[in-house]
Length: 396
Image (cartoon, rainbow, N blue to C red; front, side, top):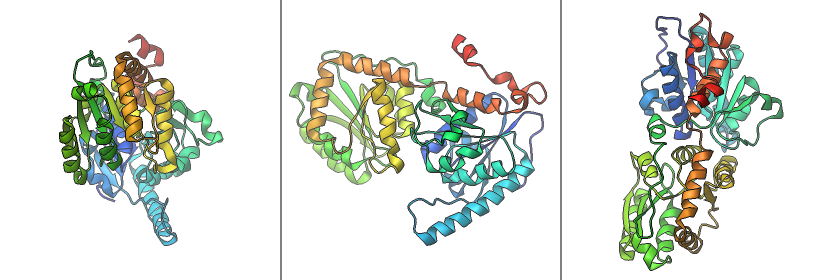
């Protein structure tokens, strides 16, 4: 464990320990909460695993401690035994850290990187909460659900929550990065009978080959009048990029391709339609900004959580779920022809997506954290000053 010289900053402000690491889906909400808690005067520390060096933004600025951790799912017997040993060692490290730093509340964000710290918080009898990003409780959070005082969820309906823990559930929504929240008020781009149509295709952190194949074949089938108006912005795998570029060039379709977009939130805001996976971060961003999407869940996601995520948007009227097996050039071409023939359909879906979002999710999550503090977090009469009730938030 690194950075074991523990120095608590002066003052009586509460110390909040965040447990996060791994993929963006676990990291982004932790980053958003850290920004909100810092605004309220809280002191923050981050506990993560060996991948902590990859963190940037607000989390990268925090005092950070690394503990041992290991995933179990999908491994052989010997690897599982090794992972269990890693978790036990990491739990001891985190327990030592909690007893030295004495955080007021510990908040975990799922993934195996958070497990040792959240187990240690339970053993140390420290108030704790977990946040679940998806519409299915993740395996790490399933392990922890009965040990924490609050379970914050992104979706109104979340599968696999133990019945004994259901009373501790509160829907806060999925916090998004401050840059995303800042453009959440941008209106849906005007769409006239002859305007350029902006379609944004996102395949997850490393692109999706199925999108690279289906998109160009589908655009070969749409009406000529529609094809002339479309501009594609697409995230591709590096190995697919040149082939996809040539396919669009042969079709005469304007396209901008890259394996990574730094300004993806701004591109979402400028899009008339997204075609994308349905990971928790993607769903949070398109519903915060309010853009319609054709959602193609990643079929191999653990517990098929992306399908559950997509269902929530589909049922709200903010998009259309299309399984990967149904995501064919023919079905996509027909969908594009139908949607852009009646622009009002897209405008209505954009409004529905916006209504399904929780732009104040970070604030709600922070409120939940404050609710776990003694006397609403007010050990000296000051800690609760930054939180708002639902009535106060709505009035504002």
